[in-house]
Amino acid sequence: MPEGPSIIILKEAVSIFKNKKVLHANGNAKIDFKKINNKTINDFKSWGKHTLICFDGFFIRIHLLMFGTYRVNEKKDAKPKLHLAFKKGELNFYTCSVQLIEKNVDEVYDWSADIMNDKWDEKKAVKKLKEIPDTLICDALLDQDIFSGLGNIMKNEVLFRTRIHPKSEVGKLPLKKRRELLKEVVQYAFDFLKWKKAGVLKKHWLAYSKKICPRCNIPLQKEYLGKGKRSTFFCDNCQELYGS
Image (tube, rainbow, N blue to C red):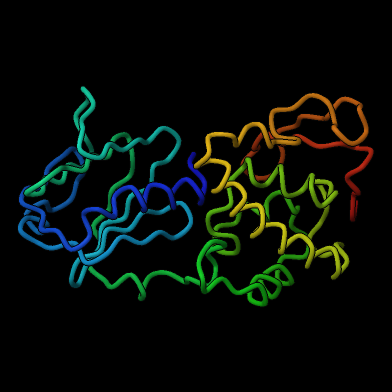
């Protein structure tokens, strides 16, 4: 599932169609395509893992899920979920969730929860974490209402870099450690974006999909942790367990 930085790259790629009129819309999505025809795209926005195509009075929300893809000015052999044709060019989304929402995006989204948005609010994140003291930190980091855009790769890397064991309880983290975690979340998100654009992201992984701890030179543990049983790589030696 693409994480926040990958959606930023998507948003930048499709921005060539900002202020362009959709001449024809179709696809497999269960939405009213007639509402889109001959409408001008006002903007492209992102919130975490959501790509938002904004029109006057409504927007289209794209979630790429696990295997979603997109093409700009080209097609795949498969039928798209959403196809938008312009005077010059086309935009296609495949194997994804497509919703048409008849509201303004600002009515729907809390931009302060998006770790890559200029309106990201660390203080609000601290407050939200205080409300879930018994939650495992590996689950808290994947909570999109707190850390919109943070995915499983980022979860593993952030916890390893801050030396926090994924089974730690949120409420048992010292305040200093919690603040360190929040700063690393944002720092790593933008590092991820930089490395992804350069095609070197995997070279910078320290824990995710790795077998040996680069700090301790001992085997990393791999478990499927949390409510979603997501793959988690960690070192029992250098990542401290806070709580039971």
